[in-house]
Image 1: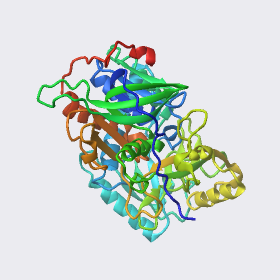
Image 2 (image 1 turned 90 degrees about the horizontal axis):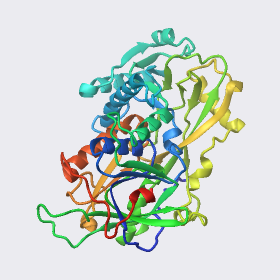
Image 3 (image 1 turned 120 degrees about the vertical axis):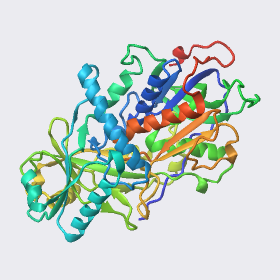
Image 4 (image 1 turned 30 degrees about the vertical axis):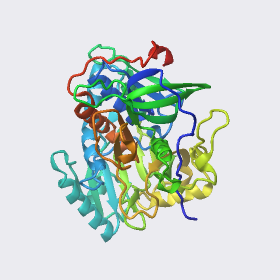
Length: 488
């Protein structure tokens, strides 16, 4: 059956005039949202930075349901955001963990264990040679890689198949505790390393239900007051709805990312088939206890490719958690939304229903474990079927489906509150210095590795186009006095 996308928007509701103002509003407390909020709080501690998260705590979706690998940056096209941000993010992540662990405050568990990509055919060997050449071409941050023979790979990992003929060693690949990283990022929203307390906070149990561009009747002359520029964002907490005027909105809502921009397209009269599509690729993991997988490196087979050559998955690989436990995955299963999913609204919460929520557990059937075992035995023949057990599943936010002919990149889109209808949907630069809407779409692997670099990119863009290098404290009340802290 063909996989169809979900084209959905935020629930449509009545406009509500804003009562309070915030400088930065970040939607989503996953690793990318928290990294961005952290970067903004560090750079502008006097400005208000608020994160809204619909769940009761962070780390509930994609950010905590992955391999927790620190990728070296060897897989992606050289001119892609994935490559640029993975290379930079890798170094920032290792540096942050080192500083945090030296300070002993909110430490981050991390290990640079290295990775072997292994193959057992001439085609796989040729792929590894191309991957090695690609890695060497990536400039100053290029990851070190080394081509190995099958015998050399088995010296490092004796449990590898005797059919292994070639391997690529990536020593800079590592693993990190995603929970540690996000706890560290959130902790600094309340106390920076220099002891300063920024004006920042995470607000849990709160959903965004509507967004509108705010176009005040003020002049855009040089030096004009832009305190009323931005976006009116309606949030819902329980049965209460609030409206905020945010100078900057950063949409980092992961699996629901396109809904916000689609709601603006709907307001502009664009038909549904012109909205941004959402695809969902489920990946399940299995834990393992038994012989045949005594590994000190991460071990990856050569990756899987889609029908047109687009890489959708790095294959069912062996990874290690911080405690040294072995797990395998992810596999790849495309999800199709059921009929009516586009407009499904939860009767209790009044917000959209996520059809994929029921897929957040691995299937765990005998057939699924058999398939997992078959994929693993191709490179680790000593792994026993009875040692495998379902662990967890995650879902990757995709902008392209299984028939894509090119690799999907991160998409970071910039829009202004002024003249929104004249701006391209896929706009990659902020057009002016009024109010900024930044949508982060398709942030899948290597999103965890890239998170700090994505945050750096966003902060640099705001420094250039919104706040400048130095900024004064902003007022936060729109018309009548209000307590933003009480709302949070």
